[in-house]
Image 1: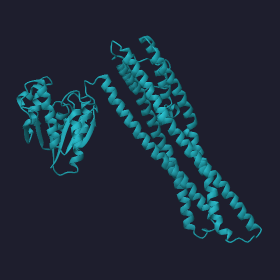
Image 2: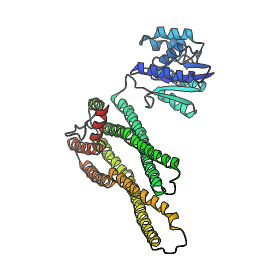
Image 3: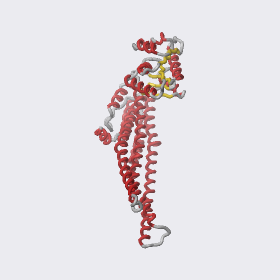
Image 4: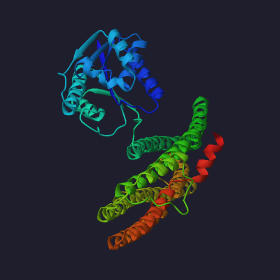
Length: 466
């Protein structure tokens, strides 16, 4: 018997989406196991939705109550879910009580935590309807998830916001999602892009084999035809991967990364407690979702500013961006540039050397000079490399051009210089008003940096095709 337990928030935003996700999780395990049971504490929210979906699928339901039912029912009076609690309890195959009846809030919270931990111990799989943030108090969803992770339990995560989510919490959840999506699409783009380049290069190789060894293979028509087919397939596969798949993933990566960095700057300004400055001239078209998030965060700032605290956090925000450019971005760009330059030199001098050898062999053959080997045996191989190397060189030059590494390095150094200047000004400022001016300048710099992700021509092209 596979036991699937549930932990999750009580007040949920977009309950229907959560319900559908729970149904899919249960159906997934139901398709693999002949015997499955659901395990729930039946708390308002995710626990109840999970139990309802288990009942709809005809699964047996076991219940763990944190304390006596009469006391537990007090949690359901305000929500109006008491009838549903009774219905689920009546259909349960087993009901267990974990702790004694609490006499104060501390004991109540401890009982919730003990119930969550007992549920984790009994479950083979834990479904976590969670926003990804730490628990607000003892016994919250975050605490139960942390315990399950410590126990090495299999966890199925369902991302969900609480209906009482603060703008700060909502921004943190959204930032995590955007970061995750950006990383995902970057990884997909890089894999598809590399495969597209390899497919194109293989098409050139097949073409070169067909040309260079044509005389040797002139009686093997099937092999020559196969090379021609592979050449065409290589070109088609390369075009499909680069044009239809890689480009779209690249745009999605840039879009999610741009939104993530836009939101990250808002989160950092909010932490500092400074008024989030409006952008005088945005570097790109901000999505409606980001505009709404910005408005929420602007409306939820502390009334009183701690100047020393705010200065430190604004300075640290600039320091973090400087460290990113100096320690990560610039060295990585230099590494890409150095690798491609080295490959270009190898290909260039190899080509010149092979052309020189080919010329000498052709000359020896023309003047009937005696050589210790038969010239014609080596000519196909030389012709193959002479044909393959120029397009390989051109492809790497294309990678170098589109990578624009030199320009990106210059841009990063300019941004570092501007951020360093802002740091000095923040350290010297004495009033809230002056700090606000420097904060506005810092946001303009961050927006300029973030605008580098916004490839408008690609976005418009993809949107026009959608």
